[in-house]
Length: 439
Image (cartoon, rainbow, N blue to C red; front, top):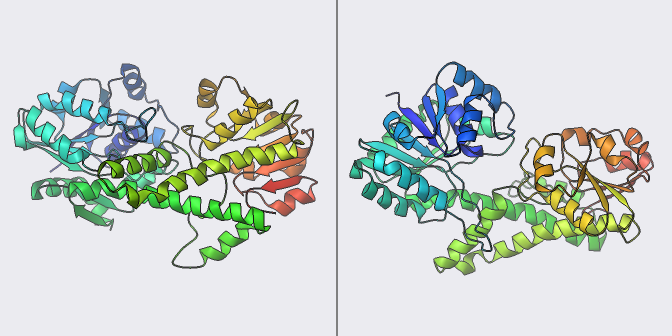
C-alpha cells in the first residue's frame, strides 16, 4: 500500500524527513503552526542549512509529492501515517526535557482522527513518554484504539541528514501491535530491501536507544578530552595518544578527536535530560558519570579561553582576537550551544575585541550575539589580530595558507581548538601554534 504521510513539525528533523520521504516516492504533507515558516517552505526555502536538502525540497514541491499546511484537520484527512517531529528542548533552569510541544501536537491532531491511522513519534524523549502519549491519543481520537502510536527515533547527523534519512545505519521501531509493525515495514520497505538493519521493540527500549547512543558518544568525546587534560600536565601529545588508541578494535577512532568538545541542539540537552529522567525513575546513580562527561566538555571551553589569554600576555584588554567558526560543527548553520560562540563571548566579556567568521552560520550568530564583530572572510576576521582561534573545523579553515593569513595579522599566534591543522606546517611559517592537549 502506498501510504500518504504527514510530518508534524518542520524544524531540522521535520523538514528533512518530509523532503526525503517525498524523494522516496511518498505523497507528503508537512505541517507547522508557524505560518511564515510554512509559506517559506512552500516557496522552496529551508529554515536551516543542510547539504543537498534544498534541492530535494524544491524538486518534490515541483512534482507535487510535497506540500505544507498549518491545518491539523487537513493533515488528519490527508494522511494514514503521521510522523511527529517537534523539538524537545531543555527546560529553562532544569536538566529535564520539555515535551510540551509533543503534547500540543497530539492534542491538536487527535480530535481530527476519525479513521484508523498510525502516529509515529521521532522526537528524542524521556523514557515513558510514548506510553503516556499513546493513552492520550486513544482517549482523544474519535477513532479510539484505531489511532495507534509507534516510536521510531531519529539518528540524524547534521551535515549528513539526507543520507542518514534515506540510507540509515539502522531503523528502530517501538510498537504495541503487529499491525503497527507491518505498516512501518511497508513505509521503510526500500530501506529494508537495501539491507538496513531493523530492531523491533517496545516503547521504552525504542525511547532509550537514542539517548543511550548520545550518552555513549558524549562519553567517548569527553574521554579523549579528559586525556587531553592529562596530556597537558604530563607534556604528552593527545593527538598521538588518540591515534594509538584508534588501532585498538575495541575502541576505534571515530569520535576520538580531541578538541573543544561537543555542542549543538542534541548531545548537551539529551544527556542532561537522560540524567533527569533517570533520577525520576530512581536510577540516578546509574548515570552519575554523565555529570562528569558534561563537566569535562564545558572545561574544554574554559581551557581554550585560558590558552588564548596566555598568548595575549595574560590579558585580553586592548587585544584583537579572530574567531574562525560560529556553528557548533562544520557543514551546519546551527549555533545552539556552540562552543565557538561560547569562547568568543567569554573573551569579549573579558575585554577582547572579537571578530568572528563562519562560512554559513554568520546570520544566526549575528542575531544571537550582536555584541560581537563579524568578518566577511577568514582573512577579514584575522586582520590585525593578536591571536587567531580555530574553533569550528570547516574545510576552508583547514586549507588556509599560513603565509597568506600571516600577512594580515598583528602577531602570528594561533590556537587550534579542533586539532585540525598540521602543527609543523604552521610553525615552519613562523606561527606560535598551540592546541588543546598538545605540547
